[in-house]
Image 1 (cartoon, rainbow, N blue to C red):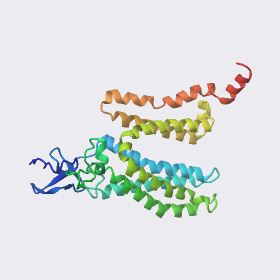
Image 2 (spheres, rainbow, N blue to C red):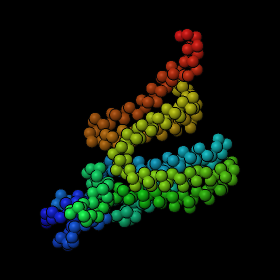
Image 3 (cartoon, one colour):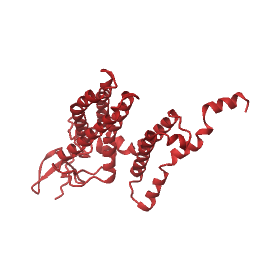
Image 4 (cartoon, helix red, strand yellow):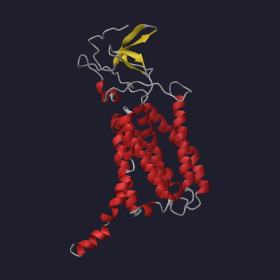
Length: 307
């Protein structure tokens, strides 16, 4: 049953709730898990996330894992044999946190979620749309119109932090024999810094990240791949396959390239979108084919010879 909203409540996210097929309550904030329809009545969200929504959640879930791996590698040192075990532990922590988060989210006990459809950027920032019908009294109608894409990420970060504090210190203390007493916990200290940063990033820029993350993935993966290959002095296929670690890094970046391309295309038209995945090896091949022409020592020597 549709009822037109009163002119005293023109707010975008104000609404009344349907309870037992009857409309109850005055204009106000919708309960969690509901959002207003076109008649400004709060309706329960019963849909499932789209592919793009899952890809966004996957991107937000990857951020702490990638940062964990980066700082573990950064602080473990070349002679330490603990890095691999710490990498595996970080993967387990993030995976366990993701599973627990899904199980606790509505519907409870299932590895699935119900969600509200994201229609526009303003859906992420309902606090900016609290109406003032008489320009004196403000109606506070702030709610999670993108349920649960906003809060589920924050809950996931909280569980990541809890699992890390429960598992990682014990593991590092046992196996990080190649590091000093202060160095062995530096990757954990780094996480205590980047988790608050990620939380603020999601709280403030969640909507912007939702629309921009495919391009962020592509740009960062291209830049980091170029920096890694340059720092490792990889200038040919022979240099690339000389160490297994380099191949692992390369394939990891290829997966990120593919993830970004799929996120942009959304695979709406498989016949047109799937061939785009053939572009994944392109940046690495281009670098290997052109690296010898841009080698700094060669440029300096040719410049000194007057060529």
